[in-house]
Amino acid sequence: MVMALPIRRLLLLAGALLCVLPAAAHAATPAGGLEAGSGGSGADGPGGGTEYGSRLTTAPGRPRVVSMRLASARVVVGTPAQLVLRLDRPQAQSVRVRVITSPAKGRTIVSKAMRVKTGTAATLDLPARLKRGTWRVRVVLYGATGETPVRSKSVTLIVKAKPKQQPTLPAGAPTDPVPVELGGRAYTLERNGAFPVLGTSWSFGEDGARFGAGRIGHIHEGQDIPAPSGTPVVAPLAGEILFNDFQASAAGRYVVLHADNGWDMFFAHCIEGSAKVQPGQRVAAGARLCLVGSTGSSSGPHLHFEIWPDGWRQIKGTTPVDPLPQLKAWAGL
Image: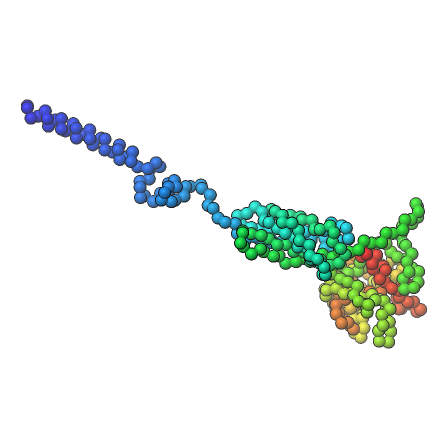
């Protein structure tokens, strides 16, 4: 009896100790139930690591031009010109930009640096003091300090002179047509109508392209309009097709249109096979007649255009007139 009591106490103490040890072990485990060394991610500490949901800090990438165009490739002196721009730069909401506007000859205009948002189209105003002539417009994009700026390709802007003011007509006077001297003879200039060459990549050429320029055995009876091969040629006025024919020695593939105002108009050097109109066919103003080409006697792609107010060659005694004033009127020059 004397020895039994101490042994019983020892057993009770041992049982109590076994209950305490698991609780202590649980208290030593990190929050979230992951034991040390189990591979889980905890909070940032001296040893490194990243918390779930924390933002990765990545430096913005190089800026680039996604698209760039002019709102209008041709403007009149004093009319605002605008550049439509879309930029991209990874991890950045905007890009620092300068606009460079350079004339064919003279001083380049550099804009102040400005911030342009990425991922959306932005419209930038070009300098209002641009003089008449051809200008090249490009942008320079600035990235991080020390990086080489990104320079875009250029787009071409043509600034035209202001058109001459039309004379004021008395109230009630007819506004169409207006008398004009064509080829030394008085005819009527059509206010309405379409320029015969679509697009803006055309010109009136040099002196040799003009009406009356010297040719071997004859004079030039029309106006040449150089343009890229394949540019659509359209009817300036509504009318009826008289001829769709080919002359290898001179005009190449040509079309003759009898307009509703009585004029016959001649379109030469079209691409062979591009003239789908037929004699007797009615066409509206702006309808396609053929494509600019260089068939026949031609040194390069262009439209040879003539106006015959009293009828084309099939009517004896008729003569052509200088079409340039009428062409300028249709072009808004």
